[in-house]
Image (tube, rainbow, N blue to C red; front, side, top):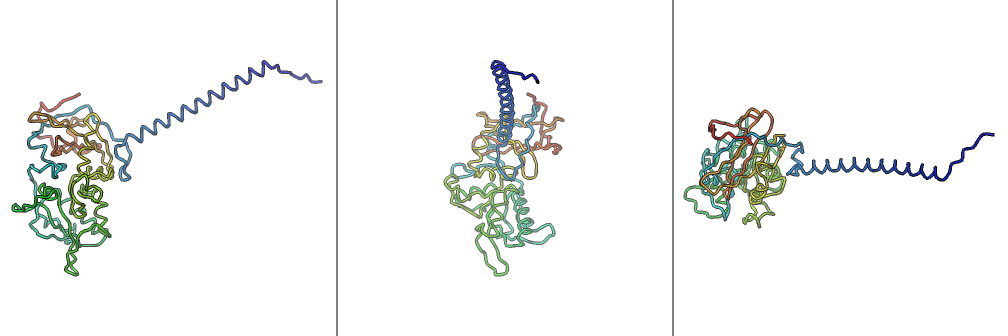
Length: 337
């Protein structure tokens, strides 16, 4: 007769204890892995300052430890640049250079006139008209409508209109749209509706924003204007649009970012940017830090006064981007952390 093994209660208790320890160890290990994955996901999702479908979430490289200083003269430079805030509280006292008249910007790449103007003598900064032209050409390609008319740009010297919108035009960075229907000879108002909603939905791709949108009148102090556009540059227009910010709000938004902890952003065309704010010093000048690349060349950048209290710096961090013109650098400007 085969011998039957009989287990004592002590042996059973010991076996159960070992089994429970194994289950606990496996459970702890799985929980740790899950928490680690969650922490990684949370860290990744919070690394992007902009939550926009148009922006990829590819992490942007940090600013290099090598940098130089660009010295800005506060009395003039705070009031100049693509991001100057001009409204009832902040008048424009800057200078407008690199201006051009509008006529040559009414044509597409084939030389066909696809837009019109209230006057061929309308003047604005060249970058404003270039953005208008690119947007207008793409609008025509998309909608096959040649009815866009640029109605207002910089005011004439004798224009005494004192509205905040007029102050915007003083910068050479703003323009108003109207419509001209050659078939009927009429001049419909530009309302941004129907086919023309394409303009407000896509203007950010060209560095333009709708300056006075419907839901920001309490912030801008100006009634909605569907026809008034402002050039702020790339990528600022995309960041503003992604975060639903008007210019007043963007000026404050950027103040949360510094050279040490910049806003990092990958634009819709995969160009990588770092954006940060530098407060103007109390003295007559401010030294603005600008990063250098691995070859100690100044990275492509723009520095704009905000017309309030400091400067907004935007740096192209994309690999192999052409270095900025460093002809104005001096030996004393180079620095390292």
